[in-house]
Image (cartoon, rainbow, N blue to C red; front, side, top):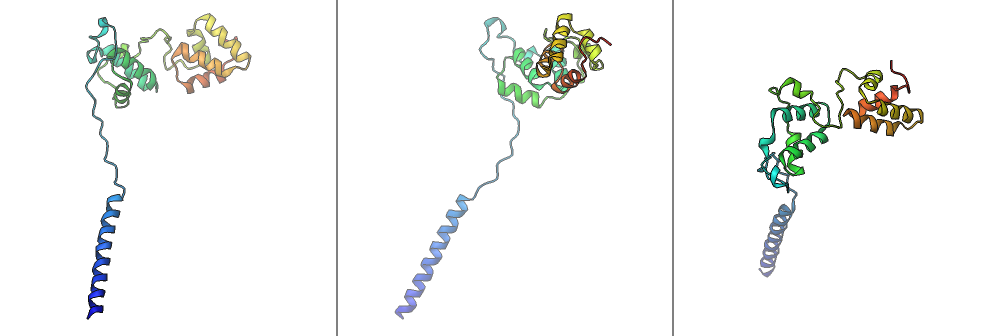
Length: 186
């Protein structure tokens, strides 16, 4: 009889240990991450001068919206984020989130969509992607500098100069520099 009590006690003890271990292991099991949903935070101004403190989300004029649309359509998200931050005064993370979730406006004025709001960009239209037409739209000293860089086999620097003065993307600039013939206007 004593052996039966001992066997029952051992079985009960093993059952208790198994229950405790399974509960502990269940608690350590990795959980699936919760799906994240974009929720914009309230617009808060960065440290700006008092005169521009009123420039918050209301600074998104149709011209600015059109310029952001143009930048996003051209694949220049960084420039779009920078413009959004300059106009609204929001932080980098919020501006990045807003631009990544941006949908191209259909109500923007057509001419403003092609405006060149920043002085670093020239008026090259998307249809003018030939070396001759790009050269014609650049100031003569810049075209001469690009000629020298291409002739000196400094194509990377030439691409950088072309991008700074045209606002074109990396791929378009590389293709133009690859087809660039120094000194040729046609």
